[in-house]
Image (cartoon, rainbow, N blue to C red):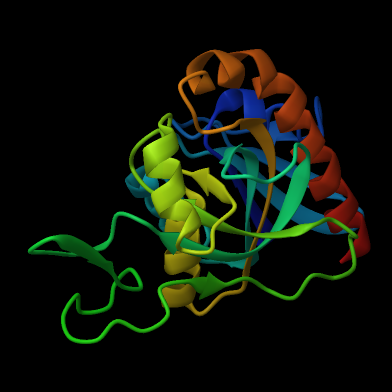
Length: 216
């Protein structure tokens, strides 16, 4: 049993969360079981992309009260720092129609008039972080043209996992939350900026997750 499942895509993002704490179990997800502030936590490295994120959420989240994603993201105009993600959508889910791509909420029929495409997170408990909507998809966005398209969806951050965790949580009837910190500007310098800023941004997000655990 776990009060909270905390997922990170990369080992660098998972290991900076309650560093050195917990008991590691065997398996491909690098699971650590941690008792912190009277709560039972499971921290896991899910791997990159929506399939990996949803798989880990389904495998490990059945007994959790809350699914939480931490780690890093790209900016679509948002300032550097850590963010509380109020909404997540999957920008590569929808319908390819002549001359346009229509986005639907992931899992909905991609036909007819689309409604809201996003999933809503649990209410902010008062961390004081800036709020953002994140667009998730199975591609690393390193192109200003692609970034501009995602901005039109109301997103100010981009990643490859949160939208899938949100969908999995909805299917399981569980609340979800996500805190991510910016590594790059989703442009042609993103690859180098991501590598240069990965550990710093991962720790910034992890510190806020640690504050959240203490607060709940």
